[in-house]
Image (cartoon, rainbow, N blue to C red; front, side, top):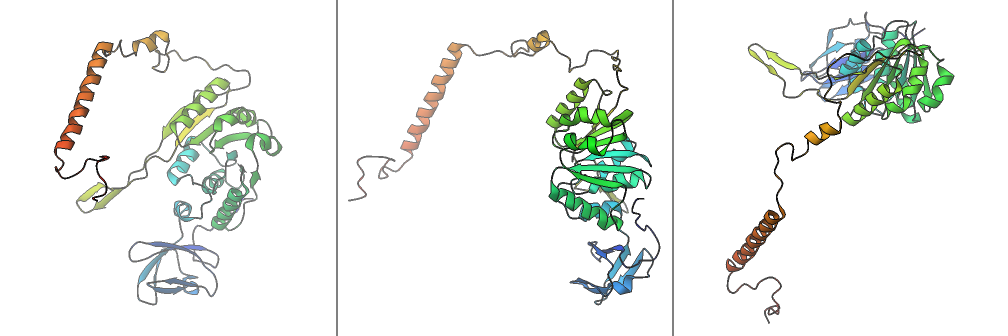
Length: 347
């Protein structure tokens, strides 16, 4: 069974509560018997929060009002301790949707980072599903375990975290053809294409989360070259919030822009060759003749002759000589030139 976090009802000891102050600053606390929430705007006793319904307003000792709500998953992810860069909520939402992570699915995740994506995947697979996470570093695995347990209240029984290299460790954890989905959040996902294909069911999906265009290109080409997947699809997600107050409606000055690229592909059945699409030649398809068409001469760019280059060099040298002469003339007659051997320090 999976750990289940309470989503509604009165606040109880052990629940996480998000307190929003007068200026919109949010504080996340875990209700503990006898504990006190301290702020420069007064104090709030945890015991006073226990038993209150979600969405209540509390008054601090200085009279300031604090809105109390259970934190959303996105709120928790953005404020939790980080051992590595997190998968932003906008990307986690796209991964869960476009990878079609469903209740009861068996999902492989590598690497686990700080556990942000693990939380979304655990929620998506549900108590009947399974998440097998892999991480190369013990420190990151420990942070992820802590964050997941902190949010859910206990470490889920349907979640395993294996410390080690995915290619080496995967066969011992997940059987061939057992995984419905594989999520690769690592520096070099192209190194894991064969291992991913082996563990995926026919029709299963791999989604790669990479930060740079060079990683994206290399991963896409590795998937194509393997001949084991459908044509990969690539995308990125940008989120721009808006300020809406009366007739003052405009985009916010800041936005969550590029965080990473998503690349997805489906596993083909064993022995199947992907049919070639009947399409017009892509701009990515080229020959030696195409390369020749992009040379400077073919584009009409005239290259300078040796005679022209010599003339240009003389012009540059003449201009330099005049600049030096002008600097000398502009100097005071009593001011010695730099490096003048006749100067003896004024004696």
